[in-house]
Image 1: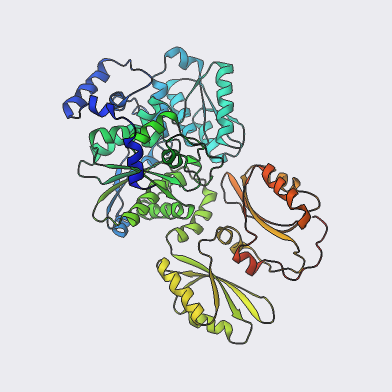
Image 2: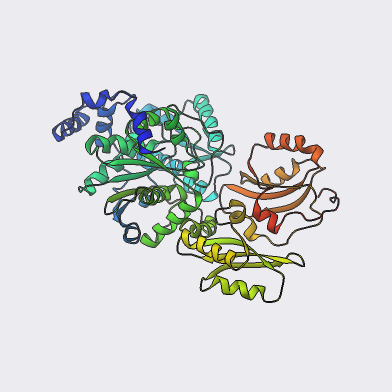
Length: 559
């Protein structure tokens, strides 16, 4: 959605708070004193109360004022001044301890003594566990079974009692609310709570204090919306000219969809790569605040996020988690979209709880996000000298990958990766191949190619009759892969299978299944009841070139 669309939605909601709370620094100082002299505020906080709550938030018992650092390499590339708000440098490596502690510090002693409970896949869990230890209260944290062990261990190390339940955050959340009622515990919501929002809003307070010169925009990752709501509630009150721009993954854009439709939207599925923002439905209060104060939302894909992780590493030698790098990816996309120059931009680097095993995947995809690598399928004649001619057409471009297999007596298919300067460079390379008489398919943006095909060996088979090719994404847990295979009909033969562990809480596989035409209804019923995300790749050009069936013979028995 563009800026005009968001403005139309925002204007449809009354802004009586602005008219009743005229802005001046005397007023801000007055409400600051008010917050010191009296701490009894209603739970349903309004704008002026958010200012009080942020100014008087009890976050600095556990949190530090994180640095606002200049990113020299990124700034030079973007031709704008980019500042990173380094929330990844907190003791739990994310901003989440601010809101968790501020909420818990407001609880009466008897509620603290009874104990608290939370649901989280990582960062909120660590914040709650640390806050509980600081306040001397027992804490139970419900985490999905799919949570990487490094995050589970981090919560336990901070004194939290971890209970693993369900495959997703939603499963863990539902179970936490059940235990809350059964045990008389107090639930600490990860985002949809005024005190949590106010705790996160101290980041906005710090940004304005640390940088008092003009700021064009502040970029903030959005999951449930607590972080951006708190920052926006503070910044828009004191510096309304600063744009507040949210950033979401293209496959986990609950806030974007909600703002677009004017009501909260629950996503049927969410992408799991940026697990810290993999939320199906945003909060009621966070949605209200985002309707009022968010100027725009930028959506970015996995490759752009991986590229942002690499960018921050090159500037800081720190490694952000995917959700932590979203704001930087959004800032880059915004600069390209708006063609701005010589402006000051702030991006909140909100987390660094990265599973080390995921770095391999991040490194592979970062080159695509930066548009530094292109992948092509090139068909050449199966004649002497063709490969040499191909290399001559390639010119001085460096190869990143080269796979060759004879196809038949007339032609061969080459799978090739090439270093490029930008996307336009890839177009020129493809045109050069075509000019040399080589049929070329650009596979740079093809997910099947990037996730699976480039790692596979073999070729086309005469046995692959009635073959369908599908990609699946499933929770990464012991036995999940075998459960998937075991759920298929014994009449269906598996003809292609590729799985690669990416060190994340989800797995990705590509499967070739030989399904007779008269059993297509059964196949669709299987897909509908499987419960995993899937993509039909049967018509993918890369599949047809490198793996697709040739003149086939009847399939082998199921294996």
